[in-house]
Image (cartoon, rainbow, N blue to C red; front, side, top):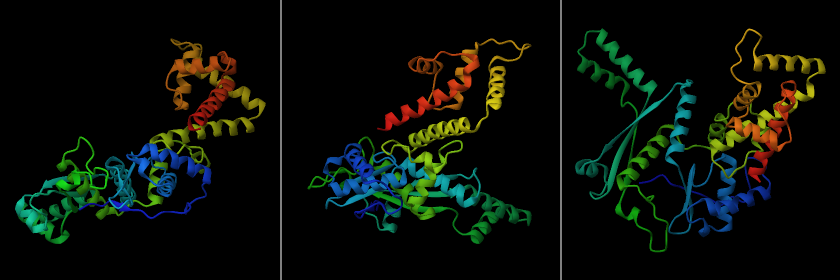
Length: 355
């Protein structure tokens, strides 16, 4: 039993306008990014490219694509990516950012396999997913019966009779044939280094997630990736993000674009008087007032501040080397100008990396 999804060939991108050049470039990358990508037809590669662009997911990492023995294109959500999606989905459903869930696994013995209609030699695991809200509801129900004077065992029994089964359970089944390549060259289904039982556990988790929250839609995946970006990131900032990197990297790229945009917008609206006041405030912030012990140079304070504001820069030496490459020298009186130039350079380097 598995939940790999079959795909139909898409002739064009159905959700948003994406240039054919962008899709074709991504299709070429797809054949490199995924296992046995060279076996994909041009149409299949275009399908994967379109889905990756629309959902902002990276083939071979966030979502896995492969061909079945008949040459049909199929996909399977990555375990870690699906887990992150399920967490965010539960937070949305419950309305709480603190919402979590617990997944518990039980291997099926021969009697349980027989009951479920599973062959004795197959590897089978039950996964039960229970959310925090479900556990809290059960505890409150038990407490209510305890307050009425019932014993603990009887209170639990009554709570179960009222609430029914707690959590969502699904099974994952793997047989020995899943670990062998097909006679016509079908890609090996069990990833290298995984045991059959590990694969069964992951299949059980995926089946339980889909049973509880359904299949991730294009809108769900887009919203999940966008939620990874920090700060005030707008739709236009995402359009600059490359598609052949992971969802996390796309979010970081969008952040850099947003920062550069805000610097540019602020520079266009600030008056000369406001600029002078901001410079004076920045200089005092960076150097401290006369009663403060400086300890660090103005240049060091400037670099540390900038690293916090622009995620692209990760070290003071990177800030200094960038200033040097721009033929600029640090000057406390020109900090605003240097901030602008460094932000613009971060945006240019991000663009170059995406090209």
